[in-house]
Length: 433
Image 1 (cartoon, rainbow, N blue to C red):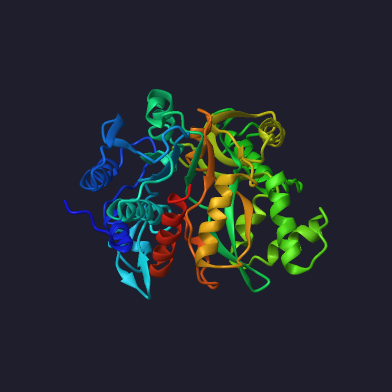
Image 2: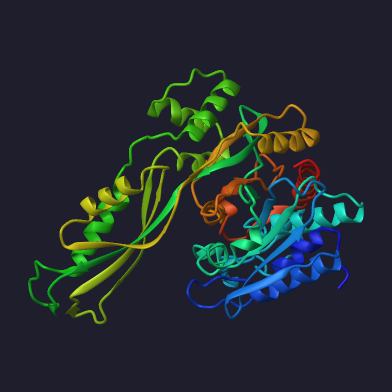
């Protein structure tokens, strides 16, 4: 193939490869997307390696040599899978990647084939110009990020840590994007992630006929547990990253910062479309997501199962688990389903300084602040081999675009101009990292 240098075209190509992740079941396109990326990088003269944890569950790594090979490498990574999309829900073909209203529409346009395309376009522009990065770059594209990474990044670091060649830092998704504070554009670099603790709740009871009185009903036990968990109001708790963000917002809005519910709520409300995302980082969260019980209306089952998505702040994993067990009650057993660590890395480091400089070259005087991600990324798995991960997928976004709602949302889309902006900023960063 001849590698396209157009970031928009690359993003469209990737969206058109359906890489839906159905969890434990194999998806249709992770290997096809890895083959596309491998062919692209090979066309640039690089030597990518594809590894499969299971047939079709393909991840890719590639070494791009820098000018100073004595420095520890930087990992620049994305994931190729997306959450499923159902055409009947969308106003466009979710895998058509059409351009409408100045935006690329399709599943993965935001999460995260935009950044995948920016990585490829930036590497191509530097190689075309004969410019080497200042240190080795490990380019990585993972499978299975949308189901915890067990068949992607987690499998890679456990089975092929040599692919990461002693790297100490990494950049990936959900950071470097713009927000508006008091009418002023600012950028958020992700320096922390809440931990993931997906829990299975199993309720036991007595099986019997639906016409009888049943005080020991597994469905009732489970429903009560899930209701208590879903309605529980977790207290305000701020990690150092979140407090630094809120203090920065306070400075931009001329508000005196106080670590109170009222002050924090006021500061977060000033973030507009991004408020919900930041609000989820000032406390632990727990949301029931699935239930399964019974097989016939007139038969009370002896067991019922539910699932809860909890996201915990750094250092809060056991606290959250104990509270969920308390809320679940004596008839419901709480089991870990998927658990991944929380992360928090420093903001005041040279790598972040390079991010700030690259953003400043495109948008002078715009402040850059740290923030914590309410979800998770593959940086969690890289952390297990000593790599400090940051979210830096730079995007300048329209003030009226509800960016957080587009993650996993219907009619996911990204502005064309945001892709071009991101490519320019990422290229400048890679030239100076």
